[in-house]
Length: 228
Length: 225
Image: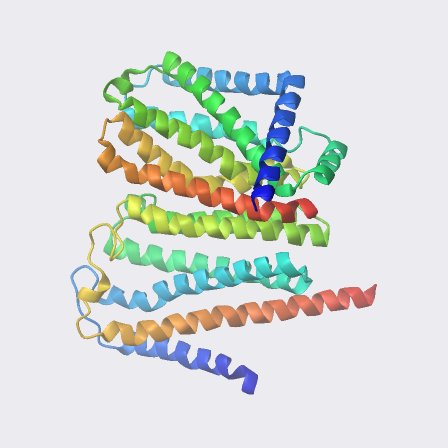
């Protein structure tokens, strides 16, 4: 068992390195997503100007992050070509492939969320954040990044098997993401309003639980998707 | 005849639930009045839906482990029946809500259970679209089975988690009392429990017929070739 876990960890580190290498080679993809974030927020700025109302500020932030996640994660299976994919699968276990992709997407989403929140508060304003419990809000953003990455990676794998990748990604992904998104919005709104951790922790627990369940499901289901 | 006893049971229980449900004396409560009879039609529809979606989930898992085409056929036909029950449950619920909670627009989007039912529709319509977009039979079966398992677990998560996070108008949730306290003489349960069973059996029966029809269709198709 120990050796199995050891092998899995080693494979996952290699695969994550491989993902990062591919990302560096194709910098324009990441640049494209950054530009996407910037232009979405800019369009929102042009249509809303500054937002002072907390629920609206919060909802718009999560909608922007949601679409960013769809764009960033939707591409995670068509980056490497068909040939390289088959070669990879002969070397590594499918479980390590999916876990590596999820972990890598988690890192990417954390970076993108950090960038988005900075640009967002610059343009749309940060006046709603006056009474915010900073650590709770940061936790909400972090859990959101992890949650988007873990629940959308398997969906992206499914969508990559069809011809219409991005379209299917949206259709299949929205219902999957809804339980997560609803708990996230509530948690982060409470954090912005400065509600005490004793009252708010149950949302964080829910989010952590959803993350774990989705990870377990991806781990169990991906081998079938791959052997197709 | 021996193998079909459950169909007879289904017809008997169904007729009992409909006829007795309309003629039984119900507690005349504020706001609800006679609409409480909808309990015998609306609630069992949801039980039937969840039950048949559970069947579909189980057959998707069986397909993933066995690779038999018939398991895949059961999974998709069960989803179709589940969608039918979901739409009917939604319509009966909307009528009921319209009379006892007021205008649809006031509660439709804030009520977690109507949200949950809309999300179930999204999930399973997406499932059907996913199947439509894949041509090759084994590929389609495998990928849609993966999505079905993923979707069902997340849907369960949604109907368990979200009603606890938000306010609900349904009995037994969000500070509202459950039906039990209105129902001191167990009048409603006499009809409700058989009705649950009847609708579950009905869902099973429709699925059974659809699966058999699909199998015959496939058989004639292969014979033609």
